[in-house]
Length: 486
Ligand SMILES: Nc1ncnc2c1ncn2[C@@H]1O[C@H](COP(=O)(O)OP(=O)(O)OP(=O)(O)O)[C@@H](O)[C@H]1O
Ligand SMILES: [Mg+2]
Image (tube, rainbow, N blue to C red):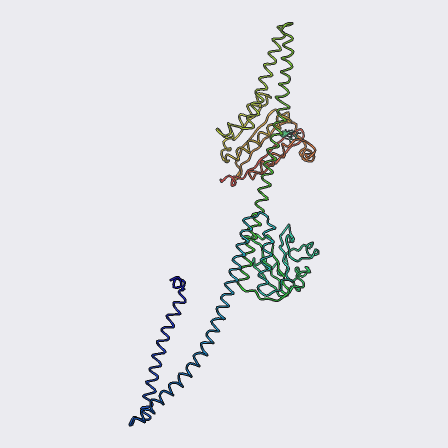
């Protein structure tokens, strides 16, 4: 029963065919025997028992001779067919085995890709697989050289290699001529059996002595990252399958490269967020130290003074108390302002224009400065996240004007210029030397201007600062509306 289940469809077909062949042989044998008997009957005739015996013997002998000849011929042909079939199956089997091996190699590479974020590991795995394929193609593994080149700026740099001399590792090449250029321009794998004649690759000791070099470009769409270059010491022929396998490995490598780049960018962004967080904390600590902490200390001292006054001079104590009340009110306002900067609720509920008006009102109240917002409605062109960024920029620029400019009038103006959202923060104050301030940023503690630029970049915008001593300052922020989905 178990045996029957194991019979494959192919062996069932072979069995049926055998039974049919046997039946045909029997039919043909019977027909031949009858034909022979008829021929001998016509030739010899049957008039006596002796002639009948002769006819039977002659027919039998002729039949046996024909059968012997036929069997010999058939067995010879059978042996030939068997040989050819075996050779065919052998060939098919080795192709299947090679495909299976390649499939496994790709699978292994994919699992390396999943298991690691290290681009180097993936690249090294790729070089190992390339060497295996070259060895299978008949190249000696000793003379194998493999290099993974990546573009950095205008030149190709080796970032991983197999059997490469140090002099080759130090070399840079532009990839503008020979096989490299050929592979890059056609964006496909290129092969050369004359590496000595290659203007760029022949500069490498490894490839100069190779008999065959293969350049597999590392690309995604139209973007070329670099190339894998392989060299072997024998002129082996590569099949189409092997060539497309090379491409598949290169594709996996490019995925790893893109992942690594994304990871790097993510890390940089993470670091930037950490730095921004640390800066915000520093700023808050400094503002608390310079503002409320000082005033509260002053209030405490005054209260101390008042308590000594109460018994001596009640009227004076009352005047001092009034002063303390003013100080406390001012500090409360200051803290409210800080809270507003940290989380401007008006911005979330009523939008950019309302939030800027609130800041202006606060500054007007504390510093008595004249301020106005023009074209506030254009703020609605921006997405919420961009409004938050623009608010922070305007707030810093207003803060600067308030602290440094001694201006009589500060104006914030929103406009739409074609596909751009433009914000201008202008004061008519003392102005400053922008270059001078930019020059010695590293030696100063302030980050205001740097923050302006970084914030603008976050929404694909840019900042320009125009200022002349005695002529006031204009800070211009430009944000492309295309990045706002408009
Ligand atoms: N509107 C302005 N008018 C006059 N000078 C200005 C104006 N804006 C900036 N400055 C000058 O540029 C310098 C740098 O400004 P920045 O905002 O980077 O630092 P800060 O305001 O001094 O400190 P922080 O912003 O970190 O609190 C200021 O110290 C000031 O001298
Ligand atoms: Mg500032």
